[in-house]
View 1 (cartoon, rainbow, N blue to C red):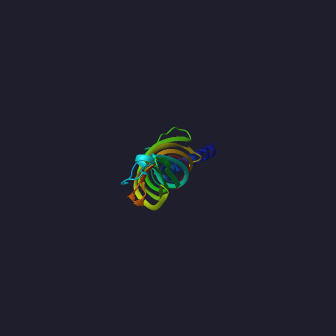
View 2 (view 1 turned 90 degrees about the horizontal axis):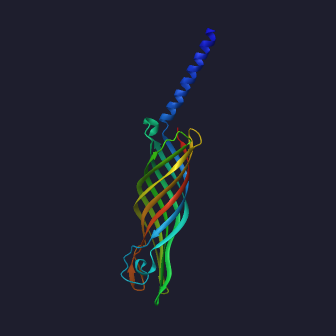
View 3 (view 1 turned 45 degrees about the vertical axis):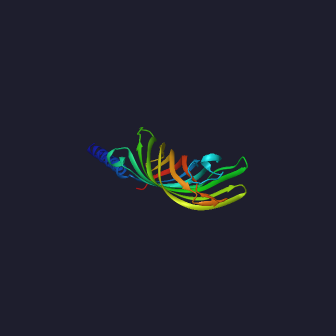
Length: 237
């Protein structure tokens, strides 16, 4: 009988140490990575410019807004602070590449004039984000948050007026920010699917100075987007 009790005690002790070890491992395993793909509904506001004159002024004659959509991909590296002190906060550094977005107005005729312009913009962003998790005691964990950082925009610009056309290219480094939320679905202790939504502002893409029909100036487009992302979050250790 004593042998059976001793064996049961040793088994219980082993299980207790095993569970404690597992819990301890979870508490210190905060580092994670999330490769992701995203769908982006992009909005371009071409209200800004400094043309001295001319019928193709976006803010005066051609209209000002256009939309596009496309896909992108990114990678996040983060740390789950909650593993250490039960505070449901995560911090992340995130890089995202967005494919070419096209924003344009025209060709539009008014009186004796016909004009138009187009921006083609690819975007890279690097953001520092903070997220707040909402514990549910289930496999689903909603979250919300946002962040700040930088956006690097590469722009090909073209404009035409009354049969003449001109093009230019350039790049801009802008302040960027985003805000959003989502839900993570835990597949096991180290893997989770991450479905998110956010609004992101990448700043303005500038045409650079161009000359056409004896007029000179520049245009710019403010680049914002509504984005859906799907990622696979996995713990590093």
